[in-house]
Every structure is written in C-alpha cells, then in structure tokens.
Length: 369
Image 1 (tube, helix red, strand yellow):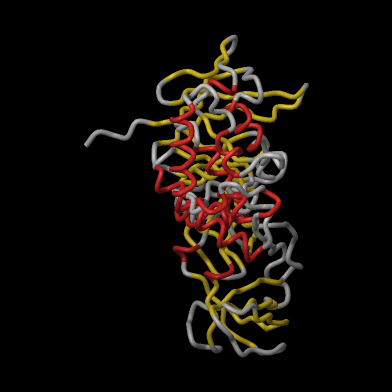
Image 2 (tube, helix red, strand yellow; image 1 turned 30 degrees about the vertical axis):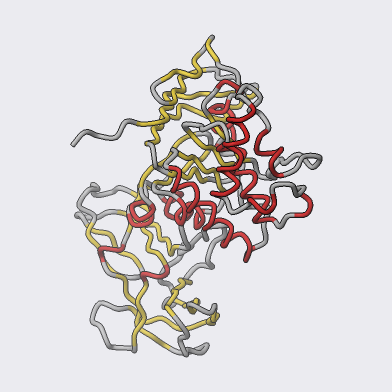
C-alpha cells in the first residue's frame, strides 16, 4: 500500500523576533484528511507557526510546502491571497457590515459571478445556514458565527485549513457542541487541517495526531493515546493530566519510590530519574488487600461528578519531593502527599487508611532535568 502524500510539509522552520526564537527548528508533515492539533503553553510558538504557513509572517529559515508546491523559503514567498490556505481566527473576524452571504463570498472576486454564487449557495447548505443568507453577523449565535467563519475559510477550496484557538471565545457548554459540529464538518471536507489550542483535552478530542510545542520547539508528535501513555518527557506527561512525581536514583537496574520498587532496565546505576504515575493509575483498596501496596491515609476527598479526587498522605518520612502538575496549570503537592482519581463517587473520609499501589506498566521514567 502506498503511503499517503503529505498535504503540508514544514522543514526546519526558524522564526525570530529580535533575539528571541519564537519557532526553533520545527519540521512537521500533515496528511490530507488529517486534523493535527498543535498544543502548548502561551508563547510556545504555535500561533506563529500558523501565521508563517498562511503568509501573515515572512519566513526567515526553512521551507513550507502545500500540495507539493513550495509556498515559502528564504527569499521566496507567495503572498497570503495566493496561498491555497483557509484560516479561521479566534474572534471569527466576520465583517459586521456584510451579510452572511457577503462574508462567505468575500475574497472570491476573481471568480465569475455565477460560479461565486453557486459556491456560496453550496456552502450555506452544507453549513445549515441557507435561512441566514441575508442576516448580519450580530444577529447570529456564537455557533452560527463559527459556521459562517468556517464557510468563508472553505470558500476558495483551500488545500489546508488553519484554525487558531477557534473555540476559546465561546462559553463552556456552547464550546463543546460547536466544536463537535465544526470538527464533523471539517472531516467531511477531507482537507488537511491544523488546529492551534492551549487546551490539552481539546487537542486530544479533536486531533488525529497532536503536536506538543514548548519554547519554540516541537517536543513530541503522536496520537492522543501515545502521548498520554508514552510521553517523551515529564513536560508532556504533566500537560495531559495530573501526575504523582518522585525523584529517584537507579541502583542495580531498579528504583525505590514511596509506591514501591520498580525496574529501570534502560538506565545505569547512579542515574538520577524522575518517576511519575498518573493519579488515575493509582489503585486504592482496603488495608492488607495486596502484598505490594503501601499504607496511605486520606487527607480529603472531592467529588467531581464523574470521578472522585482523593488527597493521600504517605507514611511519615516517605515520599519527600512527591509532586504533580495538572494539565492546565502547575503546582507541587506538599511533601509526602500523593493524589488519586477514582471513577464515580467513592465514600472515603479524612483519616481513613487504605492500601495504594500502581501497576509497574503504568510507571513512567524520565531523566532528571
């Protein structure tokens, strides 16, 4: 079977603002029919990458190709209006003085009038917007405005679609329903799509693959499941959920942690490593129910609807340095404290003693920074 031909190929992209490298050596390929999500903290370079592909920023180093055609290289750059690229902005950027039809038709003046009208009518129908053809943006809901913006981005039949934080302006309930609808429409087109987001959960939900950026560099690109289960480093691990973390030293191919002894076959004796496990991988059971479990005491528990998050104290003197970082923020657990997340409602109270353990296959090891 022939491998799919990438629709978008970025090679060794570097972009500076003064002395600051906003994008530093990024190479990436996106196939047709694929939705690639780029996720990372503010200032990591993800939006700059979209601006370079669209032509809103002039490429300084590397090459950008779409559909096998080089759009940008040092000393060579197609202007934005000539690139086969559609873009949806964070604020939709609809023209308030134009109707829905006018917004979708904007930028197609090089097409014959009849062809332009036919394309607009087809997009109105596919986006369920026909009844709003003569309406103005301010009369539409957020979800309807989103569909108008998508229709306008698709109007010139682009080979790649770029979405920059497209759902962040919507409230929580509307965001999920609009996101599901927009992603369904994009997948129906089969166009290669790159979505920038700061929300790791959104990236996992939308993306066929997810590219993680930090400090202008591409840290890891893989499927959502692979990123979750096999993160390249502790930054990626923390990005996709809260973890319990310990520092340890390898001795004779093993490490000793507050949660037990684990094999470290790929490390040498004396290596300092970070040991981590996701809080949902920490199993809790009655005392003495498992020989490899450690005794912990409940500090407090929070019922979150679909799950219960439990704060646990390790035995005195065990686990100094245990900490974790959530996907949308950062912070350390106090020394000697670990967390667990169990599905549904769990009836535990402060002071209860339990047995805690983690399967060796769920333990992650990273070289210490």
